[in-house]
Length: 330
Ligand SMILES: NC(=O)c1ccc[n+]([C@@H]2O[C@H](COP(=O)([O-])OP(=O)(O)OC[C@H]3O[C@@H](n4cnc5c(N)ncnc54)[C@H](O)[C@@H]3O)[C@@H](O)[C@H]2O)c1
Picture 1 (cartoon, rainbow, N blue to C red):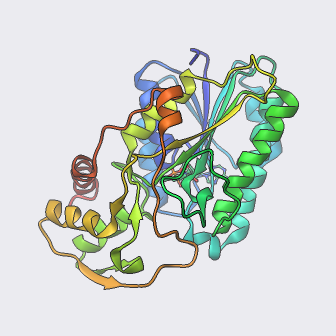
Picture 2: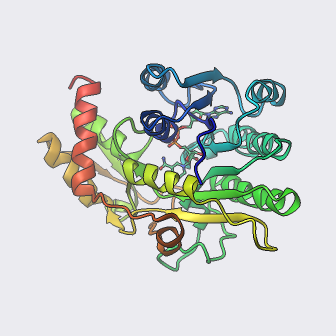
């Protein structure tokens, strides 16, 4: 059960980390946040998110790199009451992993290892929740993607590091019985979203009369998931740590998707409608590292986490566009 002790959130200045932390703070929880504020995308957006979080007295922020063992240990030792971690810091993005592979090894492999070790040595540690990704399904063709499916065919290094995180966590849950939950997020969008992702890129391009690069000629399909639904899923996971009462390692993995696959082109039409402006489309083939379709089987998440996404893109897109216009003063 979600306890009232402080929660460590890594990647707190990121899209999902920020949105989760805001929700937790509004509900009276104490959050210790970590982020290295790297410049993978506009740092001022990360700082603007942090500014909102700093309004809450029960929020404390440390600028630190999760792969820096000594610094992380120092912070950890200052907060002996932390027994829950939501680990969201990572080098995200599929395409950038073709350009800067070592960033993924440092943040997603070394960084994840550091978090596992902190949890291992904390007396009374209760629950580690960490971000995995729908990209671990890689070359799988059976839809919807189920957590029961084997996924050994990553098509990007990003996916391989996320799958490695799941395996490393499994070994630690087996060895040290650390209660752990891995969440495979499916294309998250919404206010305060990530500038490198489709909805953001498309909106920016249409606003600035620039062409949109539409990969796989627009027939690409994605299970787009609205941020508020994702936050409910993470809170559901916090409330339902895996059982310690079995001989199996206390480690569970869940899909957090919307359970509805949308054509990219329909998504673009919705953005055009909201902006009242036509997009200039540049049709391109499927990009290396990308998968043509994603769709989440969320049966286990519904059953164990009370997860139930309620936001179709027809409601989520207008909310994103409203935020975008206000934030960027369009
Ligand atoms: N947004 C999505 O659609 C999506 C889909 C699947 C998985 N995920 C995963 O969810 C998590 C959160 O994603 P997001 O969309 O909020 O991304 P994000 O890039 O907005 O947030 C990640 C945050 O982590 C920080 N960070 C990166 N490396 C770090 C390091 N070494 N030390 C400390 N901080 C570091 C970044 O500065 C950033 O603020 C990530 O693990 C990502 O891989 C996201």
